[in-house]
Image (cartoon, rainbow, N blue to C red; front, side, top):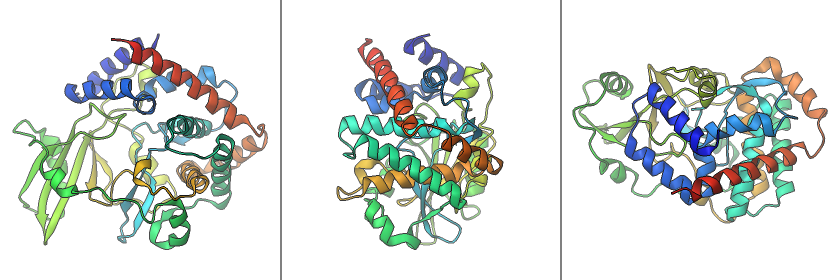
Amino acid sequence: MDIRDATISYEKWMRNCTTVVEAHLRLKHQRMKDDAFMFFRGTYYRWIQLWPEVCKDVRSAPNVLAVGDLHVGSFGTWRDVEGRLCWGVDDFDEAFPLPYTNDLVRLAASLRFVLDSGQLTIKWKEGCDAILEGYQQSLKRGGCPFVLAEREQALEKLGLAVMQKPCDFWKNLQDLPAAGKDLPRDARNALEKELPGKNLEYKVVRREAGMGSLGQQRLVAIAEWEGGCVAREAKAVVPSSSLWLENHVAHRQSFYDRVISSAVRSRDPYQKVIGTWLIRRLSPDSNPINLDALPRERDEARLLHAMASEAANVHLGTGRQVKRILKDLDGRKANWLRTAAKEMAKVMMREWKKYASEK
């Protein structure tokens, strides 16, 4: 099937798994047509369909519980149970057992897209080398959680220490459209369970966010609590696109909780799956980080090194595979990642041009 047929098929499957916000899905389609990187981010279902054929040399690598949809925009911040600001992968919607190479090739392919758009300026070979080095070093060390306050000097070089926080965060949330009376009961129960106090007065708004998940319901409960605002988001869970490939309809993401609990990190205590909803805390410093939010003065090689280290932190959750992965890496040619990622980026760019040309 071509990209049009794949999109129709995937979205039909998605509607069988959850209630879809059609207006958000139309917005997703427009963004995918307008921008190649947005297309890349919004079409993981096409990636997982194409990559085994395009990347035959790497698909037989050892399996891990992988991120799946890993790219340079997959990272964000949160507060851990000690209140420390942490950084790492913040989206596990596509978590699934896959060859470890899927995550590395997708991360490097996303680098190709942002290099072409001018969002990063690092040389292609240097960027891919930084990804491989960061991944291997973290595996050998047994993981490297990123707690920002503990590594101020190194993080300043990444640009994370001076990243821009969202402007007017609470006002923008408060201004979102009210959810109305048709709020799903299980979503309301999950939100109430995760608010910090019992019997809090709150309002629920509908939120549009993300790219790959556009079309899934997002409901946010906002309340005043002990002198300030608090917010909890419930996002409808959709199974990994890997299940779409198997033509298997389900109503929850069975690997989300497993991957965030097994990864080597100081986890977000407010991020959890309750029934068919992903619940998490929203705040100005618990948010995805876009590349354009980082300062111009940054060490891009170090940033990519950190992203790959965090990918290793996730893969270390499948601990029994570490020795096999390191052995597999040692047996590969030095340019394997550059070759596979360049080919997948070329294929996905060709898919975008076909998609964008359709009326």
